[in-house]
Length: 150
Image 1 (cartoon, rainbow, N blue to C red):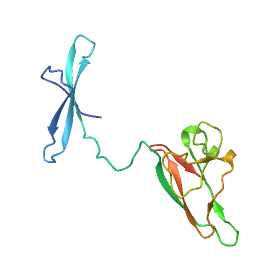
Image 2: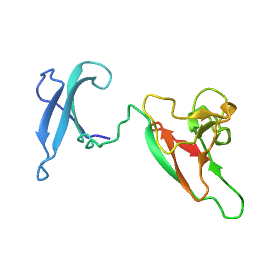
Image 3: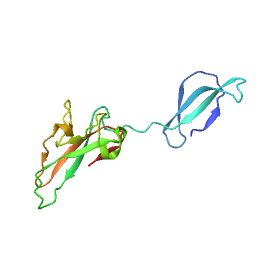
Image 4: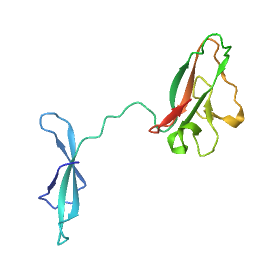
């Protein structure tokens, strides 16, 4: 919760940058109009916000590749692997849906190819990635969503 203090000036400016004392980080002061108590008049208020967090190198406008290392147990004759994944907003975790379509989503490639559909639906019966002695499968994740895998 930002600290709020009444502003002295009635300047309708949107924001004023200031320097935090001793740290050199810019703070953002926001001026806004607010009804005072029981609405007898409007006053100008000023709120002190923290600076935005620094940017990072993650491209959130496309799929974020999440790598899963798969090591099959010896003696079972495993020769391929598929990773099922889904998002929390498309149903219960046991459903493993990554879209509104009620069909499990599967990844079977080692890279996410831009421009193509980076996953399969279970009804498409995809071939798994070759995984005799171990492999990596890349899941196409959407940024800022809760992802479940199986």
